[in-house]
Image (tube, rainbow, N blue to C red; front, side, top):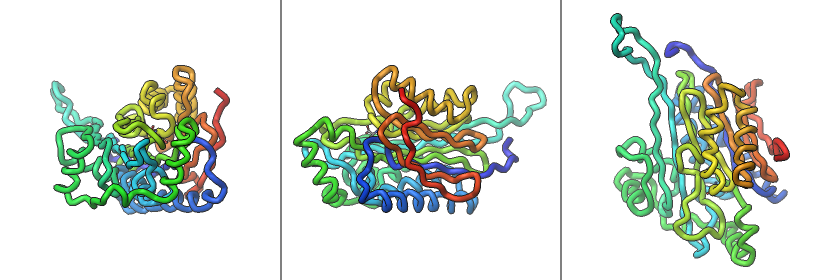
Length: 322
Ligand code: ASP
């Protein structure tokens, strides 16, 4: 298994929710394609799935039209509070214990790291990776996470530097109509398989506009906003409260061997809707490099490496009436 060379693949999303304004669509499309390109350059150069999803999500965090990093939506009090995480399932050779002839077999090692409620870093996904690589923990919140960022030399900023005019005007709108604001999404995420067969996922968000200060969404929660194991890697977007209750990404990956990626993505969304009434979207890559995606919101934007070798951008219509 370890010696098999896999064809690297990558899929990314730019959020699910209400349709984005027509005036923004071309730029969002370009940004999503370019972020996937960035990740594919990493993979094709022999880089890891983890490096690829980190690079893809960081590129989207840097883009002002996505709700992650620069351009994040604001809390009810007009502040940025971001969540992000990475998760990786890596193939490793091991010596089978208890076996008389000490046979070699492949095992999967799983690692994860995340941050919630951070306001002072440009790229929360880099800090999430730092939690995974530099601490024995999985999830660190707020000022303690920002202290880690400082120690690790991750680029810091003042919270106001992350606020765009666009986010500010949406915030004003959310004060007038809190319900409509909660339907506005734009979270970013990616999932990838590398040549060595390692799978990784990353998700990053500013959360939901007009949220209560201290609210934590699904994006940095393992099993909810992202998941990776030997079967597949997934990233979610949409109503965080519903995604958490349904454990969306873990469920989608769990269903993959039985149903195949596409059907698994659809079924996981149907289950989420049935159990919570919420709207969400999910992307998956499985251990054979097959890609799946589904959502039940008005719209979901994704970009992926198509079998033709080209990067395809899709404004995905709701996969099924649920
Ligand atoms: N899932 C994110 C959250 O609830 C929002 C989104 O995906 O747009 O924080």
